[in-house]
Length: 423
Image 1 (cartoon, rainbow, N blue to C red):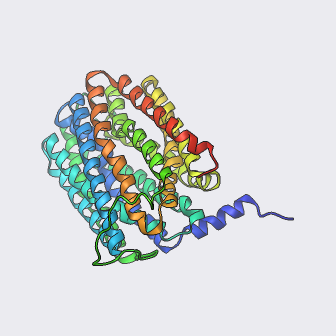
Image 2: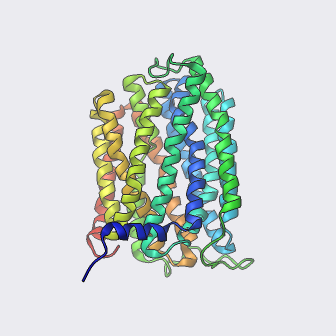
Image 3: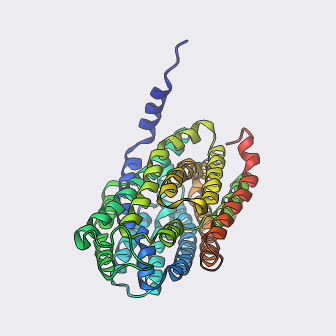
């Protein structure tokens, strides 16, 4: 009996995964991440220019810790409310809009604490949109291609994250030229600071385009399972969310405790090599290029061989990279580690979201995604804060090795699920 070639199966799966909502949610994510990543990778350099490299480490730890925690709490609330009302699009629209407007105001910031405050408001927007958007995406595709659909969405997200820094680099070059673009002192020059402020302001344009596309092109999809106007049921419905969901959530939470902001990798590079804005952008783009290359293959592998197994392999890669970063030999070693680091994202991002959808009933997916995102975000505060303190007080080597060790503990919790036939 003749069998279809694997490549044919892959094309068929991709066509089934890319419905209109999946495609346009990917476009929205692309535009939103162009806006976000014009700003985000430059924040360590910008904060160091407002203070020092050590001061920037503390600011990054506080900023991303508080911001992601606040975001996570809102993801839980917005997910549950979107389940209740059956309306998910409006939450996503306002989330994207709040973020893009707030992000551009960073152009006017003159202290590290102002940047921290604006970043928190930016993440409030993310908290409003993420769980409803993920529920929209999960409801738009069938079970057996769900990880592929999420991985396509993450690929578009990473393509925006690659395009945004390159756009920022072009703007900075037009304003300041070559001087201080690739190498700098302990702090950014006044010309670089001026150029970065222009970048932050112009990030408003792709952000607004994302909001417009969300409003016009994305439609409510999936089963409307909420009861508009009805009572909100007891949120802790363990009879509907199986025990293995909570086991997986425990492992994901422990991993998140060791998974600090990627901005610390940029701070490490700046501390060791005194990089300018241009070099920072190139390193950031290398990371996102690797994420793009791994997104669809990672999602396909998760659908075919098991989501928990894919996550486990990704976490092992994370362990190895974080253990190796302190040993990176300047600009020759770090780019290779960043390319490997992208494989961790490709193997885990789509797989984690697909695993949540698989274990949660359709009418509980908003709540399940809210729990998932909230656990990850609640761990972000101690993760980034402790990492920042270790980075500033004990050195970058101790900080990165601590993150690697915590990832190893999470691997041990998830291992029985990954080894079993259950996905």
